[in-house]
Length: 261
Image (cartoon, rainbow, N blue to C red; front, side, top):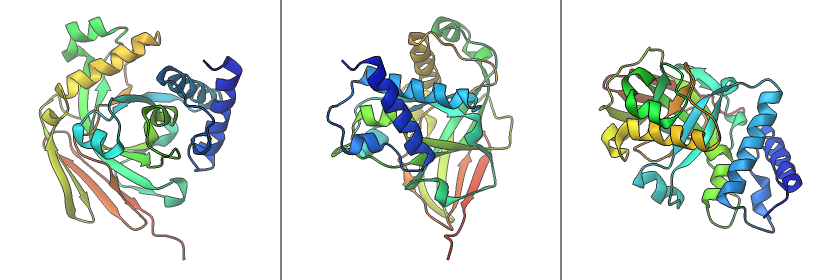
């Protein structure tokens, strides 16, 4: 088991690498493997450092919920991460490719929390009060693994590869059973339903609430929870236009700036 000072040093290195858009250098030559618990502690400490410098927590995410994504990344479990207010973009945003490393995206449903949910029991008893609306999002990723093979520990310590959210300009819908489609430059990349997420959107929300309870935290009104994608990650590059369309929760679009000459 690593000492607290070791984890703190890894967290500081992780944040410096993130700021340099060179994610997770620790894992390239790590002399040991973190446990899942240690990886989450590194994630927590990086988040605390970011909050201390003025980056507010905007919500949470669960990832790797679908068989498609788990198979793609070689991961056998869902993972959790934090969303930051500094990385929220409105639909129609233009993204600077220089701010990402190997940019990839997922089309997802996100739940806007309607009232404070202190524990999973409250959520299970009154789910309709917890959900203010379901909105379409494009989740942005630094799609990078430094270790010889992808691991859940590296994914977790890198905040589940999360790099931001492009959010539909809508209050959303209460409808939990929906279809979602992802397009790149007008070409359909994939189409699925929320039912492809194990247990549906509510099960993802409950999983996030349960994990937060382990950390002594609860969901708060206004926070956003990404429920995981039923589709794989898709690589995007300079000049690409991405669209995510849903049946009830609006559409969301973003463009990646062309590369500098």
